[in-house]
Image 1: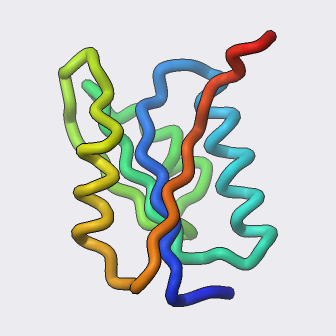
Image 2 (image 1 turned 45 degrees about the vertical axis):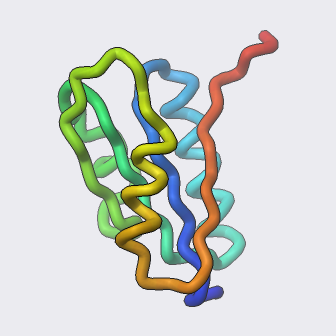
Length: 99
């Protein structure tokens, strides 16, 4: 377990594939002893899926964002500015573009 590293995952759940991918990414991180995982969801409304999947095992926050464009970099910068660790890694939850 690396307490000096925070994992940041900004997300907008716009597809079922993205929900499946965040589930896979976070479970992979748990299996490899990463515990300081911060998921920031930005969307028009909070559907509760991420909280239901992971509960208190992650640091989850929701920001209401009605903009149709997901400004990923803005949210990464916000999370990094709030980080309490020396290192921060940014993970993405891409959808499968090549079906």
